[in-house]
Image (cartoon, rainbow, N blue to C red; front, side, top):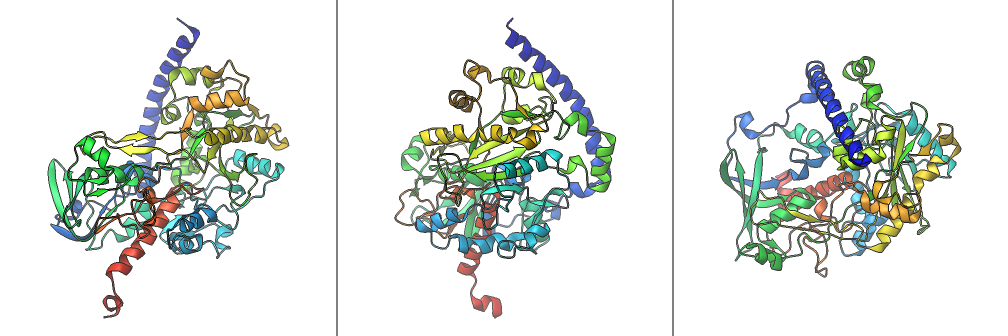
Length: 559
C-alpha cells in the first residue's frame, strides 16, 4: 500500500471518529440552545396550513421562491452573510448597456431602503447608509486577534481601511454583514417575519413548482403548477407571476414552462415553445484558488478543539458574546488589483481573509464543504492539523468566462445540468494566478512575521513537481482547487430590446410573455464587484416598486 493511500485511510478513520464525537457534542449543544435560546428556533413565518388556512384557487400575485437554499430566505439562510453592494461602475455599466433606471445613483436608494445599519461608522455616512429598514447590517460581536492583525498588515502594504459600501471600494475593511443581535438576519427574518400575519399573504412551504402555464396564443402567464404532500395544485395568478428561484432554478423553471432556447427545448421534448429566449446562458460566478494556508505560531485564529469549552458555550448561550459569535468566512475583506490593472476605482480582486483555516475542525465539516478528497486532505493538511493560521481567498470579481444552465430532462424533480465553464478565458487564469500571491505578501509583512506567519509547506499532490508558489505551480493548483464562492448570476439576463441575449427587460418582464417577471440574481447582466446577496435584495426592492407602480394608481392610494 502506498504512503498516500495509507495516509488517506488514516485521515478517513480519524475524520469518522472525530465526526462521531462531534455529533454527540452537537446534540448536547443543540439541546442547550433549544432550552436556553428558544429565540433561535422561531418558526415564523409559517406554512398556510399551520395557520389554519386553505390554498385559494387564485391570487393577484404568485411569487415562486426558494432557490438553492430550499427554504424561506433561500441562500440567505446559509451564505457568508457579507453585505457587499458592489462598485459604482458595475451599475453605471448596466445602465450604459441600455438598462434604463439601473445606474448607481438610481439603485443606491434601494440599497438604503432596506438597510438598518447598526455600526456607528456606517450610520455616520448618511450618503451611503440608512437606518430603519427591514434588513439589519451589523458587525459580529467577536473579532479574532488575527482579523485585526490582517488589517494592520494591509495598512503596512499601503492600503487604507475603508467602507467597501461607501465612497471607495479599494482597500481593506472590517466585516459588515446581515447580522441582527449577533445572529444571521436572513431575508425571511428581515422581510417575511414582519408580514407573517397579513391576511393577504399565504406561504406554501415544502412545495415543488413544476411549471408555469403560459397560453401559447395570448402569451399570458396564468397559472403556477406545484406539488405538495403528494398532491398536485394549480393556482391562478390574476395579475402577475414573479419568479425568484435563483440563478440555477429560475432558468430551470422557465425552460420547463417552454421559455428558453428553442433548440434545447426541442431536444428535451418541451412543447410548446412559447418564447425562444437565451434562458440559461450567461452563467457567471466568482471563483478563486482555494487551499492556500498560511500558518502562525500564536493562538490568534479559531480552532475547534480550543473554542468548544464551557466558558465559550456559556458566553454564547447566555451573554451573546465570545468566539462562538464570530464568522467563519471573512472577518477582514479587501478589494485590490493585480499587476494587470492599476485602476483603483474598479478593483478586480476581492480578498476574503479568514481566521478559520481548512484544518480548523480536523476535516469533519470544512473538508466536505469544500469537496476535498481524502487523498488531498491527507497530503496537504494532515501534517498541520488544528494549527492556527489564515487563508487569503483571492477572488476574481470580473470573470470573462461564461457558462450555461440546461435541463437534464423534462422531469421537474431532476436537477438541472450546470456547465460553469470556469477558466475558459485565459485572462481569468492569468489574473487568478497573480492574485493568489497576495496571501504571501500579507504573510511577509512585519505585522504577520511577528506572529511567525509562513506558507503551509505541503504542496498540492498533483503539483508537487513544480516550485512552490511559482506561476506554474499556482496555475496547476488553480486547476486542482478551483473554488466557487457560489455567486451564481446572469442566467436570465436583463437587457434592452437590442440585446439578443436578454431574457428580461429593464422592468424585469420576461420578453414575449405577459404577466411574468424574474427578480433574483439571474437577471444581473454582469456580476457586480460584490457578493450577490445585497445586490439581489436591491433587485427585489426595485422590483416591488415596479410592480406597485404598474398596478396601483394614485386613486387606489387616496380614493
